Image (cartoon, rainbow, N blue to C red):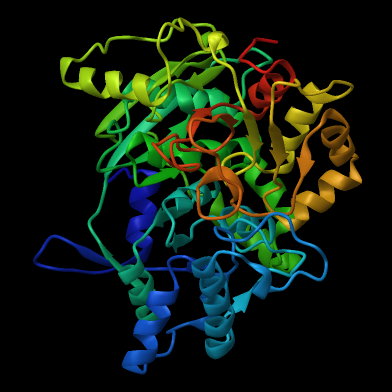
Length: 464
């Protein structure tokens, strides 16, 4: 029987099935952060249960941490009481159970979906879970990776297994050569606007095609990261030489073991005649820079396109009207008619070294518009920050007028001090533009690091 990559990963980790139609699968790697783990650890303590396999767990605080931190920074200086408690609890629980944590003072602290791959903990063929929906990021390495809920976090800690239903298979083929100003962020936003936020419901999406074969691991991670915004629980890409070259730099495996591993990882690909439940092909050469205009990741248009006032589907019309009202779009015809207040470059979607290089290339020798109240760059990890500084990227950002911050989720979501004030408009490289996502009544426009940098310079959306 010819199998897809998802089927192979599923079969490799299948434990048993239940009458409910659900199955139990084994989990190889469990990432933990401060928001969804406290209740899970509390459950273990109450039941007097220890983690089944301690070394399968890796933790770091990312959602709640302030991105302005002095060398003498202490958890006690976190202003928000809930955030402070959650970071403290992660420290306490990791110490109690002997779980490896890159804490808030560690040089390797960062967004969990950034540090996992760069520190060599994400490897092809693994099943990976985390109490965070964007765990799909790790699928870029040929992993079956997905976000889970807090009760499931406890279950995985206790049993090293997860009870779930098997997904259907979907393949998205990205073919062609994009124009120089197009990034993987534009490509995935174009897919989401094409199939909608429910287009991948109940499916694992495998990304393939000539475009995928020719992009970096950082770009692949951006695409898999946002597969969740297309409705899929899992996004994945078959490992290839690009993957192996990355792992030769990041993996902690001994050389001889890595050689054997690569031989096995090379088999992790869809068989030629395997059948998919859904399959679509997109020509990336026709894609322009993509920017969201509304309050859903599917509300996306070309940067120079007219903002829609009506939906092509009647059932969506009310959503469109509400989105225009929330985003403060009245008589404005195009995105270029809107004035921006803030710019955010960061998040688990676009805070890797390649993203910062893209933005810095646009900003070099330029200044941000006086209309921009604040522009911040938040590297995804301590390693990314160190690399960027060694290349002088931080100086480019600072000279242009950006604030250069410490690593964390930052303004991707309103769970830390980096938030929008009501009605402020933000050019953001993050993944979600829901109402209030970046702060109460804040208005978020999703875009690539290149477009965010251009928006910072001009104070409005403009092409290169």
